[in-house]
Image (cartoon, rainbow over all chains, first blue to last red; front, side, top):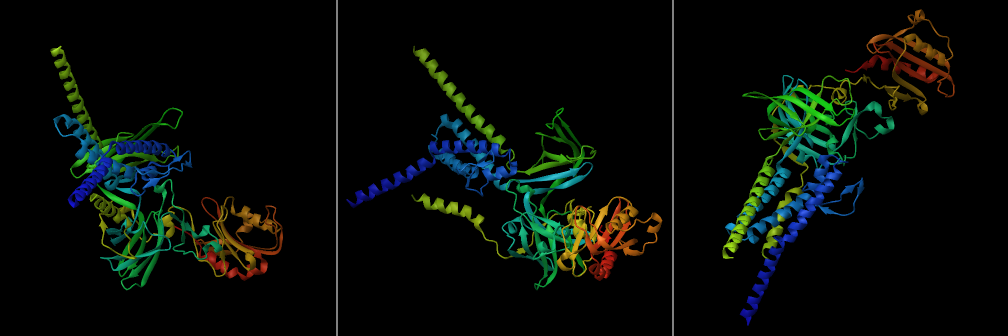
Length: 410
Length: 196
């Protein structure tokens, strides 16, 4: 009797587990995920017309949000929708379980298996893009050369050792140590290989240094004035986070904690702040994180044309020369025709000066993307296409064979 | 059923890094390669050179007792002083020639205009790195723009020509107060310079 009860329990356990797996690998979840991804893409496309692509992509597809409230015509729709990242993750596991457990084995199903693998690769590619890709921009004046792109939103503090008036080594306080800082917080950065430490306070994600002349005495009370400027903290831009310019106050401390200098930092600056410790001159600045390219880009010429009588762009074109150790290559980057090289993709993003109709010298701005999964969508589409083609051909052959057999019998 | 705790654990371990708290002290040993932007950095740059490069501005010391007022389109540097801030000092950049401006000031005090020749006989003080004309006036001050006249007022003004126009440093207020702040004003003028 006891054995019988135990056996029943095991059966119930197994059947419950199987039922859960069946649900997780089921067609219903796949349909809901596909529907949600479609809705998210549609709403995101509408919303990015009002906000920037960067802000909208972050809102709709970042892993930082579980849910989002879409906006339409500048009004928030009070219906929470799960974020694209999490929908994609659920869809990935659903597809993986379905591929392992539900797709029937056999040569006849090889096409379906191939197309499932293609879709899984697409989702893995999306995940790799979300986690590993880097985006930034590179602005170059005509005739100038650059080898560096800057991140759209992430700020870092750079402390430079100098030698004969030039930076010789740059130490980085990374974004991860800054982005949780609030104005009332203080954080001490122990500089391992430098004879001083850096203490950051009054950190604002978005701030502007204002000359003291723009304030009256009452506004100056309780405000720290450094080098003729005060830091005016502002609300972070919710719609265009790339416009945010971080700022903070920094104390330079010796290793015993004694204050040596105090400076105001703002990423709305052209030059760093300088200070001396011992005999040496150091600089410190806050800026959007920089990443160095393995090659240089020289902007030879920027050309822009609009459709007659409109401001609708017809041609935005940058003639560049790519400078590498083994030689120079002339290239053209224009709208929808990026330059792909060495794992980097350069898109024509902007140009200037746009408000000066008499300008004869221009600058061009490229969006630089480093994405290890750059080509994965193409590869996954080819795999999925091949899988569907194989499946279709096999079905067709099977159908024709059956028809022929029927005809022979008749 | 056994898989559920495992899945929860996996999900939690996936989410945990996002919840990590950063301590109040962090050791930094990260560096980056030098790049073309580093070559453009300037050492020992002033606040204006760092945050507002190329923008015209003044450097000066603020005398004791002067209180800042917001700059305006017509007053690049602006102070108040004395009881209720009745005295004011400001640096302006304006158009016209020196004599026109001096006569406008004199006119505000009901004084007769002076000629170009008489301009050269005005006393000189150091300001903006040069010897500039000092204008003094006392009497009833009519600021114009529909404002009431103010009796027993005084003016100390320094004026100099530039390539684009005229720079003026002007102190206006109750005559006794202006006289009291005269040394501060002259000291301010001596220290005033155009910033790089």
